[in-house]
Amino acid sequence: MTDPLSSNPRDRLGGQERRQHLLQRIESLLSVLLIARRRLQARGSRAGADPIRTSRTLRSLDGTIGICRRARRALLADRPPDLGPAAADAASWDEFLRFRALGPLTRDEIAEVDIDQLCRRLSGQD
Image 1: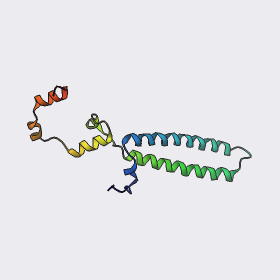
Image 2 (image 1 turned 30 degrees about the horizontal axis):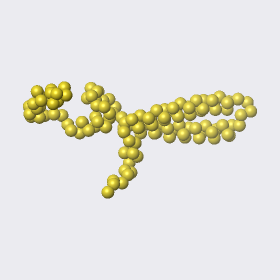
Image 3 (image 1 turned 120 degrees about the vertical axis):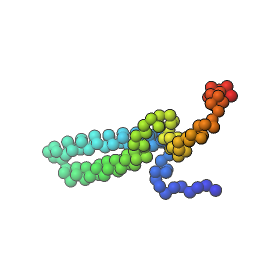
Image 4 (image 1 turned 90 degrees about the vertical axis):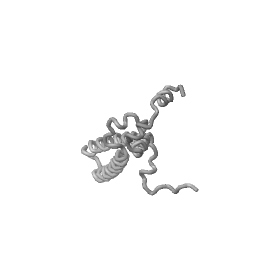
């Protein structure tokens, strides 16, 4: 039996790569919308421009810009504020979370490790 889809939209964002792709798309869209808004404001100040149409279009652009900014905040909220050196070895945010859930190694776990065997395995000799 399959699990039902989560009702939390953040659970459906996928991996870090997908969030990064979405963030890049939103940033591009925001750039285009902000340029369009500036151009519309410049045109609206000219003589002969329809002020009602200009203000309606500006409100529409402002609403869309607001939605994009909220989406950007939601995507950035899933990012760690500062991973620091702990995440330097992690290949992705998901991997970092998995290792963080495991917790730190204990002294007993370290004492039980056969260092020679570990070295052979890491060098591919085992």
